[in-house]
Amino acid sequence: MTASPTLAGEAPFGAAPITAPAAPPAADTAPPAGAPGATTLILPVTPEDRRIARLATAAIFLSLVDAAIPTPLPGIKPGLANIVTLLVLQRHGWRATAWVTGLRVLAGSLLLGQFLAPGFFLSAAGALFSLGALGLARALPRRWFGPVSLSILAAFAHISGQLLLARLWLIPHNGIFLLAPVFALAALFFGTINGLIAARLLAEDSPLPGLTQASPAPASAPLRP
Image 1: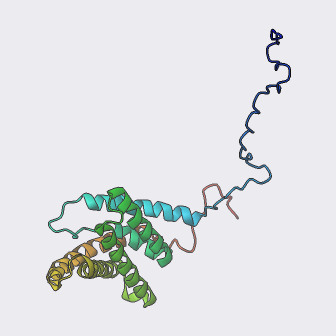
Image 2: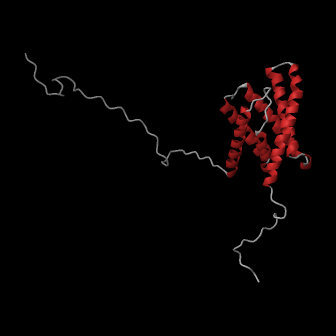
Image 3: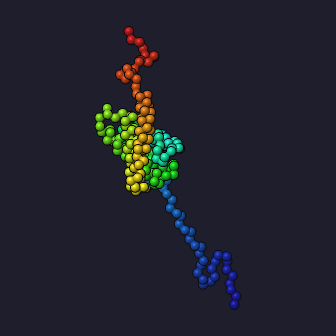
């Protein structure tokens, strides 16, 4: 008995036909932008946001310069970024100052590789104490506080916050307060210098006396009889 020949692709007599496996279904693709079901998140950017970003960039740059300056003792820095803080406080208020300070502390620690390190928390503590002191000073009559006095007040508050955090966390010993006079002298010196610089910049930005109410007519304006 001989088997009957079969054509290629055909099943022998009595056997089930051989079928190719079905191709897997194509993966679902995300709908294109603008199609029904697509979600687009748009964050509006206001001129206030752009201004804060520019001011924070200037403060971050000065903080990087500040970190590159060698000092005899750890923690004693000129605090150049406080110049920007004073300018923002006088021109745009305390809320903008808080935004600029927070961005400076966060981005500066990331760029210096100190994020979540002890230096980051010390800087954050000093910034919080400074913002609190400046907020209290802004609530008092402005004639009592100028750029220099505000700068000195912020410098003393900054070093006080750092010393308290170091005492509670890093060095749990009262001997750390023996360095308080040294830090206080540094805060007084650098706070005065930064305040004078901020006062000079604020004075240069103010309008000249006698030109606040009226301005000279342009040369192209027609003359009246």
